[in-house]
Length: 324
Image (cartoon, rainbow, N blue to C red):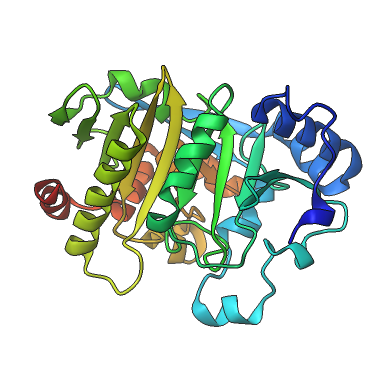
């Protein structure tokens, strides 16, 4: 258990969960040198925007993300290293907030967001979304006033595919948050309790679920999951990234089906290489480059190629939609 890692909240009954974890971040930046330096470093990260047809993609040069971007996630490497999300392997200075005795909310010491958290399960269990989907609903609702919650599949950007975890970051940091209403979408189903839509005009195909009803949105997600699984026919979890938020008394779930873990650019050599390993934040519209050379040379064409490669193509996406 993580009990000796939990901080004592002065007013846990009156503070929102969002304010509790914001206070956690403030205290960790004071006490933890690594976190302090990396959050300070965010003030000077370089960002540039590329405009597409009705939407934008941001590129962030963030050198602290090199550990995650270059993480070895093959079975042999995972087996040989200690799990950095297990309590016994956390830095002594790292503390967290308990969440329903099932998770602990930790400050992410290698941030993309100005406020960035990792939320691992207490028990060391594999990264799986289907059996933990209601947890992302609960988290996004409890954090609704400040944060969105996201999930990276075990082969879709998770640097700890052996330990179930979510992440959270401030809302409206990713373009998909504030562009969602203006994105051209096709409606599959629309009732008082559930709206299912999809888009093919956003460089990365996604399916969205909106509902105030926990049962209905869980049932719909399971159907989406099963359809992706049937099309991909993989032995492991079907590849996907998930972004969850709660606003206006309803959940919004965005599911990005995946084709690849990493694009061909990642494995090139010399000048042709672009070290970019897309996960939820990248698909949400903020692509992270930990090397300055890649940040400087990446083009609009490169972005389109990278996102097209990792997302499912039209033929597979059409099959997924048909299965829903």
